[in-house]
Image (cartoon, one colour):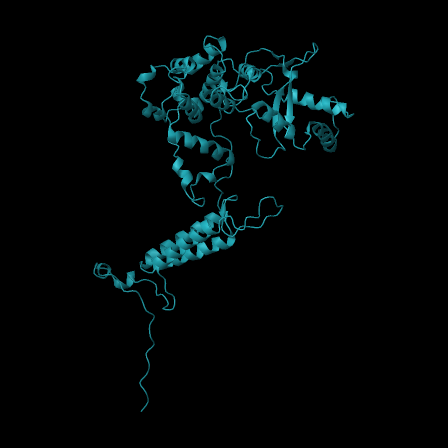
Amino acid sequence: GAPPPQRSKPLPTIALSPSVATNGCSISHFRPLPVPSLMLFSPVLGLGLFAGCLAVFGHLLSGFPSNRLGTVKPSREIGYDVLRGEYSPFAALCFIIASVYTLVGVLQYMAVAVQVAVCAFVLVFVIWVVYGTPVSKPSGPRKHPIDRHPEWENKEWKFEMGAEWECVVADASHKITEANVNNGHKLTGEAAGRQIWDFKSKKDDAKKVYTSKPSVNPNMSDQIFRDQQIRKWKLKGGSVPDGKWVPKDALDAARKGVAFYQILQCEDGHMAGDYGGPHFLMPGLITVWYITGKDKRFLDDKKVEAMKHYLRVHQQKDGGWGTHIESPSTMFGTTLCYVAMRLLGVKKDDPAMVKGRKFIKRQKGALYTASWCKFYLCLLGVMDWDGHNSIPPEFWMLPNWFPFHPGRLWCHCRMVYLPMSYLYGIRFVYPETESDPVTKSLREELYCEPYDSIDWDGTRHWVAPMDD
């Protein structure tokens, strides 16, 4: 007789747990999608593959091959690229495969509705990553523009020793610094692009006196540097474009601009320029100079006098200083500049200090200044570390590929927070705080209440409305 008919063998399915099978609902409604028997999806194996990718590409092959520095078109690294902050395309593909494998391995134990929901979410997420707005894309203008404007006294300031300062660049700047410090060590790093100011006393009675009037223009436009470069250009036989000549069209304007800016180019090829706009940089340098011993080789008397002049010029009519030279007064800028002038030797009864102190007290004291200012106050010992938010140094111990590693911060930001986190970790305080008359006085000058009565932990999030 004929053989009996063969029944088709169904695809295997995953058995449901008793809790699912006996919950009173239809079994068919919760039955997972069938999985081909030839594909063995194990969540544990998927996680192992993902961990293996981290070990291989995040550690073993990170920085390999290391031939990218100093090349015009460097080859991509196979593992995690620390400089670019990303994995190579091949490594990324391996991570995607491991992730998809793990996800499928988990989904095979889920109900159909859950599988569909997860797949839909993944699809939407991929679309958002590819076509969405990047995280770092600049936003539009502020919805609530600052309603205050900077205002200075209608006063012209004179800087009589401006012609005695010379901008020195490249190798020459290295030689001057090494001679001034004279500690037996050579400066490291590339000399090209470096610029310093060196004071050279002149006995010329006709030397130029530089003037500035912030109420007209707070930006000094590198007057001293530009005059120096123009003098050098003329000594080489060059001619300076006539400032009164008005270009006829865009091409003429470009020619005039090139003719002038080639004069400002330094000997080593770089274009030097003043970075004096922010008011939150120089006070930090002054604070570090003060708590490390006030070394005259670092800031001599001439530099101290020039810094004091600069800070006096930019103090505004209300007694405060802005976050930068064209900003209205803020508690951030005012507290930093006030403390900087006191550390530079300006007495507390100086008219500029009296005005600055009144501004600080009107805003309820230095408890309402911003984070970076509070950090420097903590270093000086005129604010307790409990009044500062945490800067955990442990984050720097994370592997480079970790999504929240501080190395992923903007370059300037991470270079600031690296030393900050270390100093926060050891809770550094100026060793002579209790005996130094300046820091002891600052504890009284900066606050509206007795220093010893302040609940520091409760103030760490305080910030003045004008700084928010």
